[in-house]
Image (cartoon, rainbow, N blue to C red; front, side):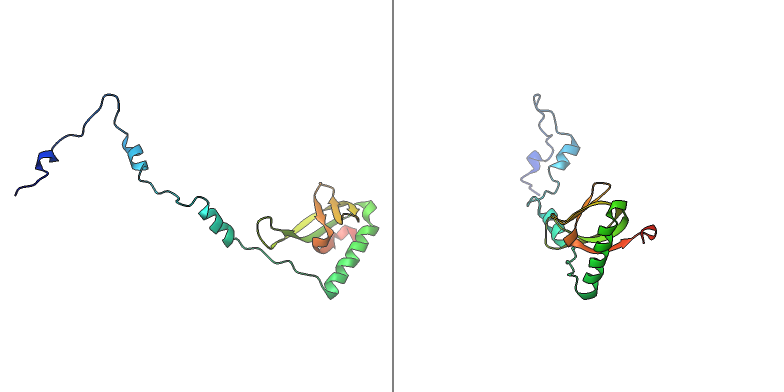
Length: 138
């Protein structure tokens, strides 16, 4: 059998004095997978992330919220402790999520439409879905 590669089959790999051989670990790394489109995986994950829709209050729910806000205004000097459920809009896409905030209300800014809590948090009144008072505030 006449093999045309017989002449080079048993040759050793050339070694160069000024270029040391690459470690096997580094040689394997040059064949590792790569991201052809940078950021694609992040974009897919962001698209798959679910958000809630804002629910508009109507009828009895809106009336209950108005009563709770009135009660809060009348007790603001006592810094009442409340639990507010409000809508937090998402910064990257349409929708958001509903969040509960429990704490003492320090101030109500009627002009800006914001509740200021004693811990420094702010909640937009227009985003509030419900307010409930703690047992000792009733």
